[in-house]
Length: 207
Length: 178
Image (tube, rainbow over all chains, first blue to last red; front, side, top):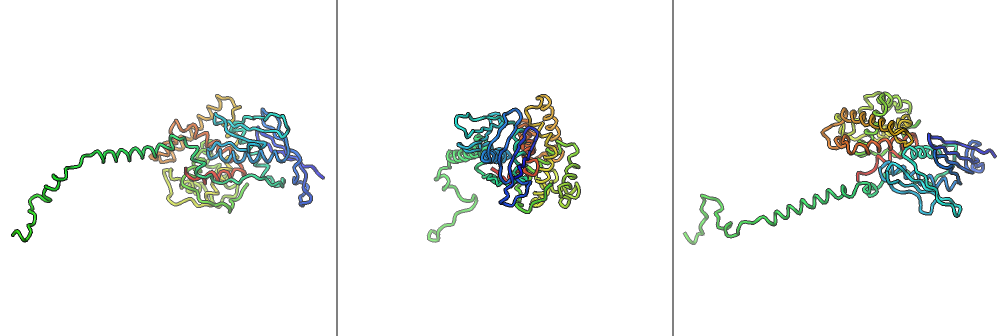
């Protein structure tokens, strides 16, 4: 069976996938239906390699992370016990990719990526998943609009609370003024004639 | 490169249209011949029916309510999809430039100069095209907020470059207003 190797290169990132066509599924000789190995080279970091599960784990962490980054939401992605997780670093312009080996006793590898490295990695993964020669099915979530509550978190608490607090103060001030404003005495009000210059009608009995 | 897909022709919100036009304006700030390049690219990716000339492209962009000359009706979903494809194709063309701006491996002095140039050009374009009486436009020109805003715009273009970015960009533009 013919072994196929495809490379996806983007500036600081190089992804190599190797595999065989799944002849039972009717794939042509050019296709990869069974992934045998993959290697990822990011400039300034050790070469990464693994099985299909590792690559799928990388994709399912990086792709939703990139999607959320576009909306300005800096959440961490990747299951706690999974092979890969990615999250923003304190500086906001860097990202920390954490890779956990399936071998026991191996410390997790932490890779720092800048925005350009992340974009390179995302483009390599995009090319792989859109490559028609690679007949693998990836279980990554589809890109969808975020929920309102997910977006609210990116707005600082002070800004979020400013409008309701200000509105509350304005209402309280209005009520305070209304309560403290002295009302005219009731007797004085009723003693005043309704209209000056007009006499009130007398009852018939008194005529 | 890509055809305008029939699927997910959702109508963009006002905020989405504003953001889409701002991305196109950023592309113009990056590429001095951006207007012509957009038209040429739109023809390359098979969008000549939507944008046969610069005027038609400009008319679609005028749906942005922040522009000096603005159109009241909503942006047609097919036109919105075409503009999204155009942004992604242009971002792919300009990717080396976007990479230089975002990379920490580039010489710092040079990177700062590039950012200054971008800020200057984008500021000029905003002043020229947008309605300066709108608070949102003044916020775009505010020196305190423009740094993170410019970075967000460039980062958005870098992450939506190429055909793989179309779905991501569309999803982002469909985000609800928080």
